Length: 98
Image 1 (tube, rainbow, N blue to C red):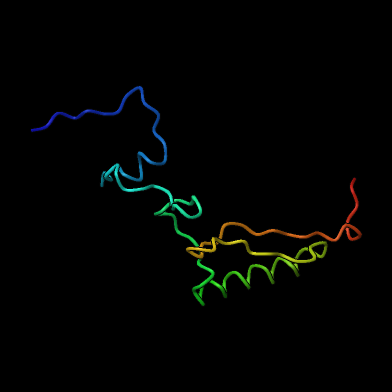
Image 2: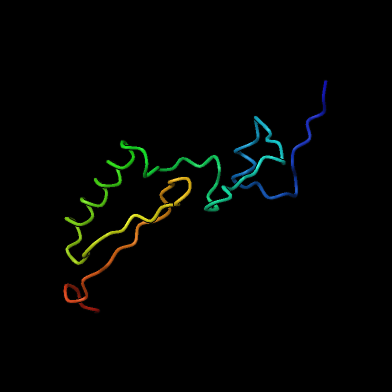
């Protein structure tokens, strides 16, 4: 019988719960070398037709919901195709401060 040894006096972060049941080898990289995103993160791939359709639908919905948005550019990693962020260009004449 092994002794239960809880990790007391240590922070319990996302990595703790992610690898609690299946410890991961430390030599395996945690981040993609090309874009710095997490390796095991669920992501949208701009090279996948189904993911591209989701990206287009999100942009279309956002453009119709927010009239002050002129255009949205999906920025992705050029090597692996992961969607990194959306860059919105606003129409300054369509909104006022205050």
